[in-house]
Image 1 (tube, rainbow, N blue to C red):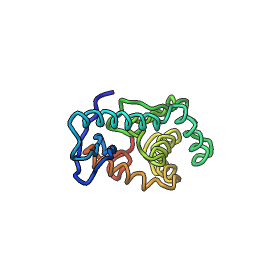
Image 2 (cartoon, one colour; image 1 turned 120 degrees about the vertical axis):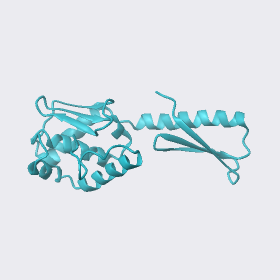
Image 3 (cartoon, rainbow, N blue to C red; image 1 turned 180 degrees about the horizontal axis):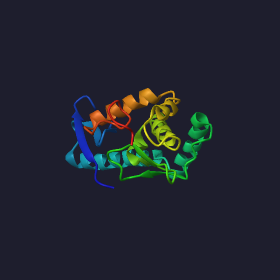
Image 4 (tube, one colour; image 1 turned 30 degrees about the horizontal axis):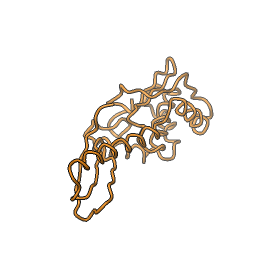
Length: 178
């Protein structure tokens, strides 16, 4: 794992407590203004490790992804969209997910790991729909639109992409999801 970008913010109002949170790719550590540089270094290392442990615990496994795909398939596709495999991948930086209808495989970008479950579900539904309709036809979008939070998830991904200065999100008004 690479060293995270860390920003330390000192506060005169903060007396004893230290806290940290993630803001995009950066970890923000809040400390009292009176803290020594040596104590700061110790606290920053501790807080970064704590944030990384919390995030690691929250990561979803491939097995959980397979189970989620099965549930979404039953809910929105009546069991018709059965993938042969579903897994997280680290090499998708311009897409949220991809599907190969020929071998019925689905891959989701690990960038989705920290997003709300309903956003991951939307991307999964989008990819499952490709098992029934390979292209972005009106029939394809009719399948995707069965997911009740489809529009909200598209907006979330658009906002995330804009905030991260990425290309427009897949599935937005101008681009297909994959």
